[in-house]
Length: 310
Length: 260
Image (cartoon, rainbow over all chains, first blue to last red; front, side):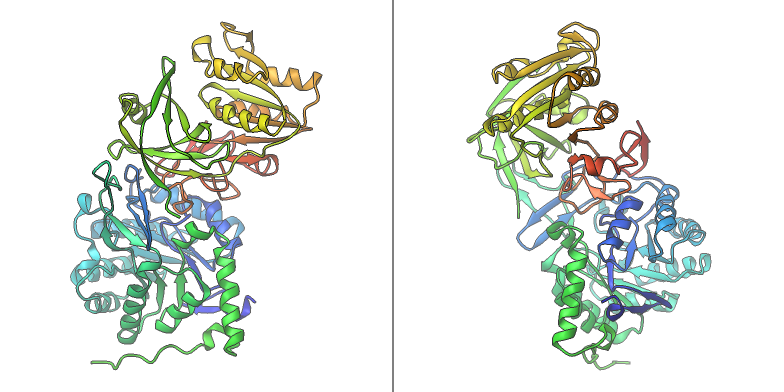
């Protein structure tokens, strides 16, 4: 089973295309290990910051018919303790790790990247697009091609590890931003972060349900947006893509693959189905490969690209 | 499934100087050991185990320990609270002779459990322990169940001068129980674990919870990585014996490890 789902990604061979994305079940080394035991191929740390962050007060999540909103507020134990969890993970498990980092300026990103460079993690992901800290930090960095360029350029000088830029869907045009990331030397992109942000209201108490009022939207309702952006970026930018957004089944993974994703993140579905969702998804991918007479996942053709405009 | 309810507080009962029970008139399908998340949308959101769960109403019993509970103590009957749940694992409901060991403000959840055990014809013995007489909770409520009860206080101001763990050790030597349930401070549970070499048990553990729906990872426990909001808060002997974190540390809101 494992062989058929092997993926080559940035020079590493990965057992399963399923990624545990940043922010999901990744506070402790043990939950990262649990994700691997349950079938994930790569795990991502919480977005680590220079100093520890307690995150927003609750409610930090709110469910609705199509998915959920979250405003965790980047809770994390800080880069030093966060990397200790990664090292402890690595003492028992060989699976590759992505360390996600978040900062609001080039200097802090460089400082964080340097620490990740000294760690056992394989990849570095830049969270340029958290939508839940607007009050504190303003418009996400991923909204500006210039800022994306400067940060990635600076980070690349601090580390020899492949750098993945996690972009926001909440922009007018994603292509100029993805191009900036590529020009600055990004090795891969992660698409998409949560959508919106959105809000929900308790009509009896006349209050927003989230304490932060607004929260990033995830779950099945955002999958079409993710597919569209992945397809568009894959068509025009040659970088490998980690696709995330509303994936719940093996067939969703195939859709992401066809749109252009090399690896696929599964986050909110962990809430609906628990950690063994990864095993279920892998079985469903195999089932699709059987039904459609493909030997490997990598044999499944992508959709034809949009005509390159340049 | 979306499990959010906006409910008026139906009744507030004062248990001790720092403990109140908040009642809600609503049918909640819950099992003993499960918890709900409670918020007023102003002061954060916190998990509380159910202390009472009947056909047409349920309740939580809250100790005043910080900002959130201070604000909760200002609420009056008729005020709205937003509630989601029930969440998490529940106690196995035995039919046999069982011992319940409770400490401090974690005792009330054993009242909900006792009622389920009794309706399942189990033979129930309870140790209700606290630091001092004024902190013993649910004395009258347990009394009305006509179960075998032992009260212990650290200072001997009510019942026997002993800890819950000392009393449990003594009772287990003289009487034959088939199962032990416990809810209390972690160090009490940790000490109790050592006295339960030959008997099966379930403990209710607490960890810092944020999402309560098994996605954020804040409440995972080492080295199993299981979520205390989904696979917990009630864990059985098999799981507890594997925990390296139990009795030693927990993680705070940021995920930093804090020793006990």
